[in-house]
Structure formats: structure tokens, C-alpha cells
Length: 596
Image (cartoon, rainbow, N blue to C red; front, side):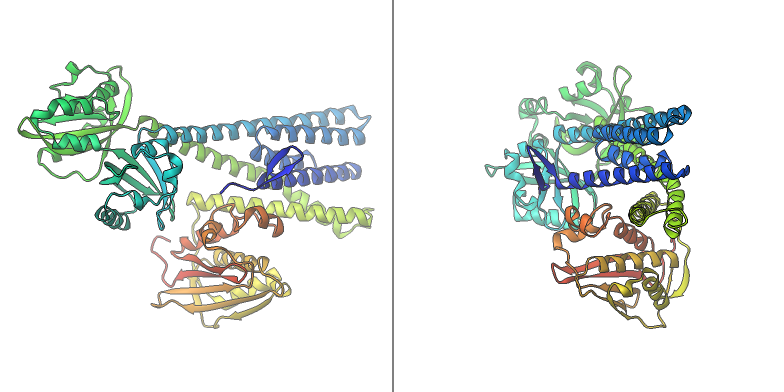
């Protein structure tokens, strides 16, 4: 569903972008006020680094327009600095240098973000122009979410027509549907699954499916049209010329190997390898394979000679005539050729796909490294800022601060503390995703831990809380991490509850007595069924465009909580109804996995 937009004069702005703009403006104004106060009060520890907060955020969200924000912040900082530093020329030169640094930092960040976005654009190009059909569908309902033009063209549908169908509706017969459902229920990742689709005209279209789960709900499926190959399998020696006409126009490389020697190669394989037909025919296929892959290829080809079924494709590196390297996925089928057994080989060129996948992985790792570095750099100047703000607020009369100024400083303190929490959460999430976090397990009582969470958060003053946990209940887990998880769930329940807020915290043992179940129930706004799975994704909320403003949420805490529980071998489940409240249940095994 398209994101909602707001029209301002002649411009349409997405609600998410409007929220980001408001955040950037708020941060920039806060920085200007704090800078003006620090210059006027001669607090040298509060300096230009504070402006990096709105500049980095703006450059990340709007790479090119972030430079404009950096320029505005630089001008504002320079104006404030000149006002209080004049006529000290040394100080004024320092102010100018710091203002220029703002723009340089914004340029660097914008450059890296632009490179990352370019990598994503290249991946989109591969998706849209792939020689294989690609379809994304829901693992549960099999609703089609996205397809490329190649897939729609296989079945002679328009993209819009096929996107309205269920993936199961495309299968030709109930038998084909039954086979597919049986296979996908058993295997999360599969390849070389042959079946038949129904074209728009109702004709059968043989396809080879390979799929893998992107996440718990989404399946990515590659579809290769194998009508030509299936037809080739049925042809005998008398209709070999007709078979050649079909295979020679196939975009997929096709070979016939008999007694270890290549008897036929179509033009696609010649273009793939760079060799002519005379240089290929009568040769063994292994001479075209990279020496590093030959041992594996020999083992793979042994199955052909023994007439053993080859259930999965294999990927090998091929050396072209010019010395270049291409990567091909091999699919094999036993056939009859010249009244003797042979093997039909389809080679799908995945060189560009593999290169782009590696590039995307590198870009993602680079982006994660940039985020971690930026978060660390932002956290360092926040500590003295928090300290000095607290010092100023604790003794306003001693520092000659009037009441209005104190209120401004208090608002600044809230904003800076919120920024610190966001940075800490981003760092925690990065550590969890890297898999470097180690659990420190111990045995502890659950009831005191829950009471400590409630007392520390002051939650009793915000809601009516009922706790039903027996004092004898003990957990074996990382107490510090479970404390954070419990705090996140209770805080989430209170934030999204409607007055009068009523929160229930209950404990029960699992059905088989193998797990602890800790439930937190609220009377809040609830979550629709199709949004439940997304609330545990980083930076996701049940309704991000509205709730992030109303409840001051970033959407990281639940993602962190779930990852921590999963490290313990458990999970977090949600039962919810819109406008009727939600129940979050933490599932923890009574015996931790051995690798925890």
C-alpha cells in the first residue's frame, strides 16, 4: 500500500518524510539554542559537535538535501559564534573552521549513503531484467507480492493481472498444487522442483522452481521456463532438427553429454564460453571448468554415468576462451540421444547475479559499520552535554539562569537524553545482529525482577498494574537481558494503553512443562493481524507514521527484546485485537540450549 502524503501548497510530502523534517528542525533549533547559551555562559565543553546530530540524521535520511541542512547549521553556528566572539579574530577563525567541518562531514555521509542506494538500485535492475522469472509470495496465504516482467511473460499475463492471483492458482492441476504444498512444507529452501503452470490461455507451461524463505512470511522463488527442455526429452532421433530449432533460440545454455563427451551445444553456450562449435564438440565438459572446481565437478558428473538422480543444481566456475570467469548453475536430466543414454545439461549464467549479491552484502556490512561508527561518535559528546545540562538545571540560581531559560534547558535535556537512548539501542541492535553477544546465565527469582522493573520505571504511577507471579518461580537465563526485555514489554504496554491504564503481568508454565510463559496484558489500542509480524522488525511500529509521533517511539526495543529471547532459545508471541488491547507472551525454555 502506498504511503500517505500531505499536500503543502504545490508540493506533496510523504508523512514519514514530514516527521523526519520536523525532527531535523527540532534538533537544529535545539542545537542553536544550546550553542547560544553555551557561548553566552562561556561553557567551552558544549561545542560544535552538538550540531553533528541534526547534520548526520539529515544526511542519512536525505543525502543531497542533508548538505543544505549542514550549510544552514554552519551559517547559524558561525553567526552565533561571531556574535559572541567578536572581535577575537582567533576565535572567529575557529568558528569558521568548525562551520566548514559541518559541510565536509555531511558530504562524506551523503557520499556513502548515495553509494549504498546505488547498490540497491543495481539489485532492483537485476530483479527486473533477470533472464529467470522471479516472484515473491506470502508463505502462509501464497498471495503474490511482487513479480518481474519475465515471470509474467512466461504465462502471457500482464504484470498487473498476475499480481492479483494466488501463487497456487497458477499451478495447472490439483495434483501439481498438492505436490508443491507437500514440498514447501518440508523444505524451507528447495531447488530443481519441476511442475506445470497454466498460462493465460490455459496451456501447460513446464517450469523449474527454486525457492528460499527471505523471512518468516516471505518466499523468494526463481522460475525457469523448461518447456523447451521437456520437449527435448520427448523428441527422438527422427525429430532432432526440430529440437535444435527450439534449443538454439533458448537464452539458457544447453548441452548434450554422452559417454563423457559433448555431442551438442546451443549458441547460448558458445556465447557463454566464448568458444566455437568445433572447439566444443567432442570435448569433455571439465576442460571448461575452473581447475579449483574440477574435483567437485568430477564427483558431480559421476552421478550422470551411474544414472543416479541429481536432485539439486550445482554451481561451477567456467573459464572462458579469453581467460575470463563465468559462474553457471547446472541442471541435469537423463535423456536418449542416438538410441543411447545421454545427459541433457542446462547451464544458467548467474555470474552477474552472484557479483551483485556479493556487492549488496558488502554494502550492507559497510552500512552497518558506518552506523556503528556514527553512533559511537555521537554518544561521546552527549555525555558531557547531559552532565552540564543536569548541572545547570540543578542549580539555576547559582548560574544566573532565569525560569524561562531553565525550561528551555529542561526540554533540551529531554531531547538529548532521548537521543542517547536511541544511540544505545542502535548499538545494542548492531551487536545482536552481528552475533557477538554472549549470554551470562544464572538462576534467579522472577517475581523480584518484575517488581524491580516496575519500581525502577515508576510504572505504578502511570498505570494500575496487577502482578500474578508466584514467589517460587525461578528462571535460568541472563538476568540483565531478561530485565531489559521485561522492561521493554511493560513500557510498551503502558505507552499504548488507554486511560484508565490497566496492565496485567502473569506467569504460567507451558503445556508440556518445558517452558516459562510470562504474559503482559494491556487495554491499549491493539494491533491488526497483518501488522503483528512487522512490529518486531527494526524501526517498525504498528502504525509508524502516527505512533512514532504520538508515543515517542523509534521501533527498536521490541526487535531487541525478541532477538534476546531467541538467543535463549525462546520467542515472543502476540495476541491482539484492535481497540481491545494486546497480550505479549515471553516464551523461555526451562533448559537453555547447549550453545547459549
